[in-house]
Image 1 (spheres, helix red, strand yellow):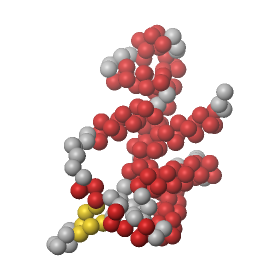
Image 2 (cartoon, rainbow, N blue to C red; image 1 turned 135 degrees about the horizontal axis):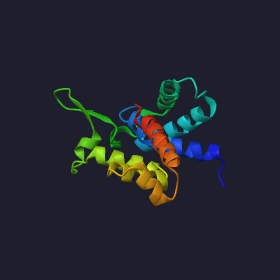
Image 3 (cartoon, rainbow, N blue to C red; image 1 turned 180 degrees about the vertical axis):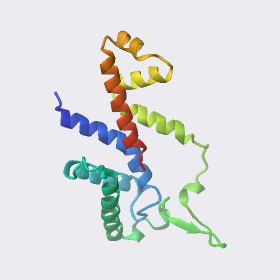
Image 4 (cartoon, rainbow, N blue to C red; image 1 turned 120 degrees about the vertical axis):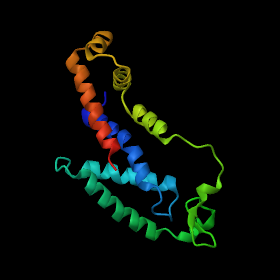
Length: 172
């Protein structure tokens, strides 16, 4: 059985990944996007394990650490490695307007709100996901407690954990 720290760490990491992905958009162009996200996740996990969490400034400290470490990594990575073949590479037209290669790929518009909500729901435990879904459909905590065979205080505890994960996930 996993210990509490490992479980908590995994849940925090899952909840943080969408924010980490957003932090990596349009930055550190010498690295491919997937490499940026992977390295940023490693830095987040390292900071989660080593920085004090009770200061109330963990996310600001993580972002500052991320900027420094990713900046160093970006400078060490040769820009010619991906050159104009990278979708992240900056292009410009005759008027000086810049854009990246993603705009050259035809695609149907994506509802980012929907995908972000789906990502958040998938980051929750199965019980928390069911509780949140039922809550959004208007079910009362007493109904859910009875249906799951648990106490109302357990429902409240799960809802508080969901709020905390959402706040972490929603931070920019």
